[in-house]
Amino acid sequence: MEKLLANQVALVTGGSSGIGSGVAKALADAGAAVVVNYHSHAEEAEQVCAEIEKAGGAALAVQADVANTMQVENMFAASRARFGSVDIVVANSGVQKDNAFADMTLDDWQQVLATNLTGQFLTAQAAVKEFRRRGPTTTSKALGKIICMSSVHEVIPWAGHVNYAASKGGIQMLMKSLAQEVAPERIRVNSIAPGAIRTPINKDAWDTEAALKKLLKLIPYGRVGEADDVGKAAVWLASDESDYVVGTTLFVDGGMTLYPGFADNG
Ligand code: NAI
Ligand code: BGC
Image (cartoon, rainbow, N blue to C red; front, side, top):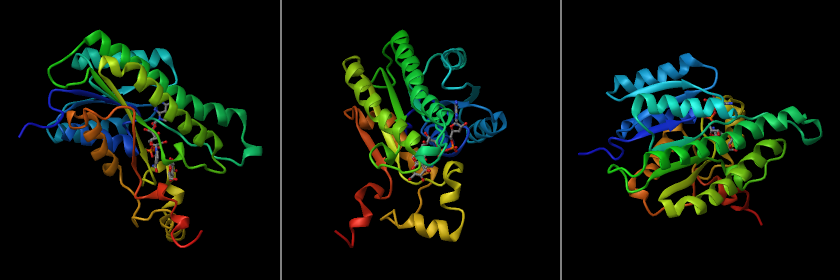
């Protein structure tokens, strides 16, 4: 059977770790060649590429800081040089720098907004330009697909994390406004909003029994998510199976946004 993303090229920012590596591997498994972006850990990105190649896929590791215009442009140029173009772009890179509001430094605020929000702006902008340059293909109904990695915190307020929650709230309207602007060109822009997924970013929330018990109270479905849960959603959103899905946020959260505190209260 033909794979869903056969003959397509995907670029995943922050593809070297956590959710990004799960997404990169799932897209490769569905037939896409994958550009695995990393910021500072080349060996992790090379490891993801090696796993993809071992499974019969094609992958390329490319270093870039997503908050730097020139580096983002170079990343797309590297993708063009190796694979000709790109069809699917997953703007996934993100960081947390948590602190109580009054103690949060301007640097903590700016770094999180730079990576999480400006990084998605620059990545999506380079993607739109590349889709237009390349023109239509026969491999997908859309001219291109952009998936923004948001979070349940695009809607759930998060004390002690105002920089992070503001960045994800920003992604919600960046995604929707961009989707409205480029849909007439048949560029599909959507978001995935994961709940708690087991990755390095939230290790403190799941790596002890006490922390895990507390976290599970927020997840009606009763388990922490895995990177592959997000990977499978990304494959669907990137494929023609979701061709009529435009400007929407797909929550992959085990029910975290169902206000679980109200289950026996209110
Ligand atoms: P992670 O820490 O494993 O991955 C973050 C990735 O972003 C890494 O690959 C890192 O190299 C990359 N990155 C950081 N700064 C960068 C920069 N300046 N330029 C390029 N890449 C950079 O964490 P995780 O969980 O995999 O996070 C991935 C995305 O998923 C983030 O946007 C995060 O906000 C989002 N997310 C994570 C959830 C979770 O529970 N793990 C839930 C909801 C959203
Ligand atoms: C955060 C994680 C957190 C999850 C659920 C994500 O956006 O990065 O640290 O566990 O949301 O609250």
